[in-house]
Image (cartoon, rainbow, N blue to C red):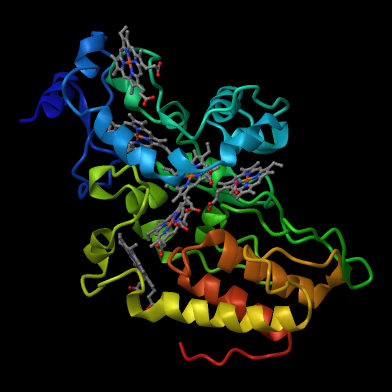
Length: 325
Ligand code: HEC
Ligand code: HEC
Ligand code: HEC
Ligand code: HEC
Ligand code: HEC
Ligand code: HEC
């Protein structure tokens, strides 16, 4: 037994994560028995192992936390803004103050570090179901993935047209980066709803099941080994060519949007170049942004819904999708 494992065992009460997750190897230790500092801060890699992975992740390297000086962004973009929001029982749109010294999406954002100085400190700060503040009637309830969905949810729904025109389009229009929870649920696109992804029900702890894998990998990058548990024949994330198919459909739609002048070749992140558009064009643009620039899994999160969103976009732009399913 490694030093770290011995310490975890000393934590006494060892629970399996969720009743159904007998296929996970890491167990969550929830003992509140107080430990000494040296039980955690010692020669083992209990902390440093996760720190090293986290430091290479986008949570550890990105610059999104800098935006958390603004109250509108603080709840999702900074660790300390998130902690305060969760403690206050607020959703991201209810946060009223920005952070003077914003922190990254760090250990303290997700874990209860130094709250009881026991193994319960590694418990998650929230696993409450997430009532999506921007999507009426939608609730994400995916076990430990609820932690992720609290931040990785859309900020906007497709707006109502006025006289057939959608106004208020800006360079950062769209559901907002991080709509992955809505994608799993099959909501928040323009003109199409559902189906719910098979991965929402099948994968224990949803986001956490795929993005941390069996070893609680803190790079937050999924591994093909996880897919193989259910799709033994998978050799890459492009299982059954679904990512290739979605990318092709998205490129077809992107070309039509470019022709119509809704985006331009220089807008690498797909930033719209118009401030208003006829509702059909706006819907096509919205769905393209959602799938191609914001969800970013190229169909893996919800293959059928991603396909339906792009096909809706193509048909709104007057083309029909040239694909076989
Ligand atoms: C984005 C959220 C997130 C961040 C940031 C994060 N973790 Fe985690 N961590 C998790 C999740 C989710 C698990 C899996 C929880 C489980 O298995 O119950 C986990 C598990 C762990 C475990 C294993 C606990 C156990 O009981 O098996 C350790 C240790 C840990 N994290 C340490 C850290 C450290 C140290 C940091 C900062 C360097 C950190 N984590 C940052 C989400 C996060
Ligand atoms: C249950 C495990 C655990 C115990 C017990 C524990 N710590 Fe920590 N400590 C952590 C984790 C996890 C971090 C966060 C590491 C990071 O941010 O990368 C941390 C961070 C720290 C840091 C770095 C600065 C900071 O606050 O992030 C110091 C200093 C520290 N602990 C001191 C102590 C002292 C002193 C004690 C005893 C009174 C103690 N710790 C008990 C897990 C523990
Ligand atoms: C406190 C809010 C918050 C929580 C909680 C959170 N994230 Fe994130 N996540 C972010 C932000 C903000 C970014 C973008 C960081 C940047 O670019 O600086 C991000 C980035 C990511 C990325 C990289 C995306 C890219 O563009 O490459 C992945 C993957 C990710 N998160 C997965 C997860 C998973 C899985 C969980 C749950 C275990 C989780 N996140 C929990 C806010 C959060
Ligand atoms: C509901 C939570 C939430 C709120 C509120 C939010 N964001 Fe984000 N944002 C995210 C997540 C999650 C990501 C990372 C998603 C990914 O990479 O897939 C992100 C990424 C971004 C990115 C791309 C990464 C970067 O920093 O370059 C920008 C730009 C951004 N947000 C701007 C903002 C601004 C500005 C605000 C406030 C006006 C804001 N966001 C409010 C969740 C949120
Ligand atoms: C079925 C497994 C699975 C589930 C469940 C899942 N993801 Fe993913 N996710 C993936 C795969 C695979 C990719 C694409 C990775 C690639 O192509 O490099 C991805 C991509 C992402 C990205 C973009 C990363 C990047 O590098 O651009 C983010 C952010 C993300 N997922 C967050 C989440 C969140 C948040 C949840 C839960 C709401 C979630 N995922 C649920 C497998 C999953
Ligand atoms: C816990 C089980 C589970 C895991 C893990 C899982 N999937 Fe799935 N996946 C399913 C189920 C169930 C379906 C729906 C039935 C089917 O098509 O096999 C599905 C369907 C799919 C489809 C649609 C297939 C089609 O015929 O259109 C793709 C693509 C996919 N998964 C990719 C992935 C990838 C990539 C990963 C790893 C990142 C992954 N899955 C991990 C259970 C899982």
